[in-house]
Image (tube, rainbow, N blue to C red; front, side, top):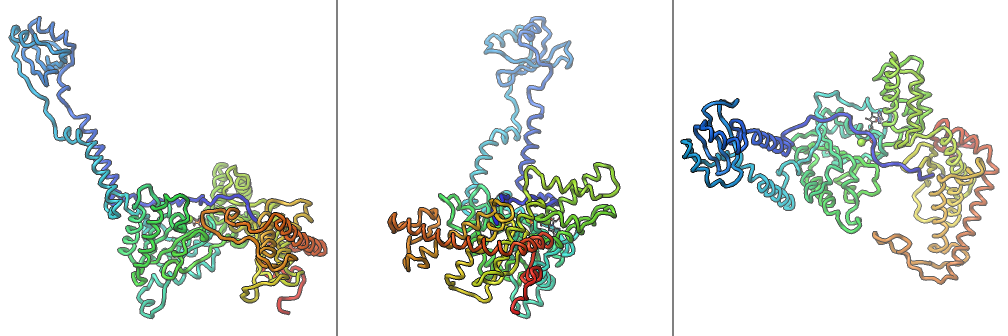
Length: 622
Ligand code: ADP
Ligand code: ZN
Ligand code: MG
């Protein structure tokens, strides 16, 4: 099942803001000093703030009256004078000369006024202010220049890593106890904790410790939480930075931030460096359209260089998180880099309950609230969704002035979550869950009633990636080539979801898209590549897959229209035959389909053994 639109954006922000550190933010400091200077300059008393400003005509009439005792002519344009009597400022006044008054001197002399000329004093601040635009421009060019040269990690904060540090003291330590479920992930990270607690012991034994651990999982599954908990368990500092922080406008900034981040790590070892959204920098190089990715590639290269330059005995472990491991540059996954991958799964019903318990413990709960039921009623919710749900419920209760959070608050919160306009999470309704269960049961059931198939590994209605559920089969042993019978049965199984939906609802959903695509692709390759049709052992349509072109353009057609028709016919024949077989098996096992779907609704995930138990079949291998 596939294709339920969903956003890859993580909707949860880290609630804790780091302490704002001026040392890391020299740019801000400069800015503040600049502003301060500017305001001082603006409010400084200047030559113009002298006495009361009066019109020039008024000044002339004062002269006439003979009450002006002395004047100072500033810059040939401004007159500051003193009257023998009058005005609020003890006789001080200012006036502007509106034009070049050639008669002024004569007039002053006639009236016996003492006068002198002066140019206004220029404060050093004024000089700086005058040159400020030019200075700023020069500084900016200098920064750019240094950045381009790649040596700019000291220029203001552009090249600084901005890493947020969560120290071991201060805020409450997060440990593995704060992470519900995720046993496998915790198990893997346990080793990292042991190492960080006592790096010496491990290196003495010559044991190989992973330098980088990659946490792979959908948004909200608790990757960040796990990384923090690892630091908390080990009692070491934790440096947190997001991949998108590295990607900036200026070329070279990202690379220099990477350098800075790793330097901080080295200085503070043992510690954990956590890089969230690794895919933002770690995308495969050279796959961008039309260039423009130099900055990102440079950042990625720097990251690779830094990781290689690290020695495990430095006591720094790098943990990264992504929900798109498929787009990562393979170089990142090579030994000595992120060579350890840890899958962080969406929680199933039991795990959802455990997460509920952790978060419910932080709020006053009514005694009647049944967390098991709430867990059951929130299929598809991630850890973050659950945390959110508890928070919302508490808000509803608070709004109603209640002492405790009650069932109805949870219900209200859940409804809101289900109906949210901008539905970021993929919480599924009861009805959709049942439909998914039928679909996946259709796939799963066929594994037990076809001949040439691999055994079922597990079937699940817990969403994963873009799929609403999965039915996974696992071969008994590694197989590199497959025969026609196996391929046919694969196509039949691919049709299982579609057919189950048809049988139960009389119509199908968009969730069948991927299945149909898979089936068609397999049939096409049987005919065109593997010679498994009546057209015989011929290969049609040589394929090459450059990165830049779509597949349609890249496949070059080396056969006639007539052959194309024949190929289509053969593909059709295979598909029709497989679809028919899927129908016949599932019609025959209609009751079992019902039973299995119900079991899936209740348990969400079933292993091979569990399916056999539900269906009343013999155990595998028996
Ligand atoms: P991710 O980094 O995978 O997107 P986060 O670690 O940011 O997810 O998880 C967001 C929040 O969801 C966490 O802060 C926590 O409150 C909650 N959460 C997620 N998974 C769990 C879990 N397994 N146990 C407890 N809380 C969880
Ligand atoms: Zn399917
Ligand atoms: Mg996260």
